[in-house]
Image: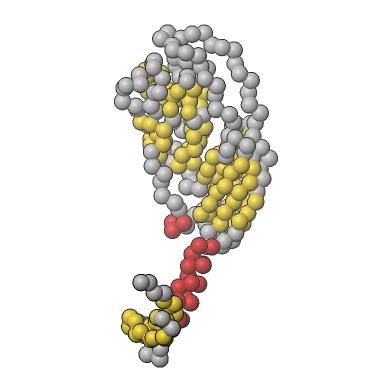
Length: 251
């Protein structure tokens, strides 16, 4: 045998929450929990709603597109390397890194993004373009069944990891200076990659159509920049207001 109840509630004159409910056609009043805030309860609820709205709308969003470079034609098939298994896979399609530059308050700076990775797979660097914040460690695992090597002569980070296989422990490098670090493989000379080391916590990578979206941005005046390669760089000044959603196309 079942029954149905309809509930409603109100604050009585003592600031207590009471419940009206109906049971089989009869109406009852049941005194619920006693609220410590009494008559200020409605005021506190209103303040809480206002605070929640301000918290969710206090940071800005930028989205848009970047004009990407035309994919380079596939190079001639390189000569087979010693120990090579299979043929080189196609490189990653072009993308760009979009980032915000300026003076950020300490409270607005996002935390470091942890360890990143550049995988060597199909005789290509994956991803071909990796953005990291200054001070970020990057690991370089080998996903192929033969030797690889990673080195760079770029000023922000010069290193040579030597030759190693898939089952060797992947080496790690910490990128502690801003700038572009170009990656090469001493064994497979067609391999190209880049790490863009940024002195800002606000960055993202576009998709292959050039679309990007930067979220949780602080308010203020900044410069929005995009980097795809040395020949394809863009920038625009932006003024970000609380809760703003800004559309910016870089081309």
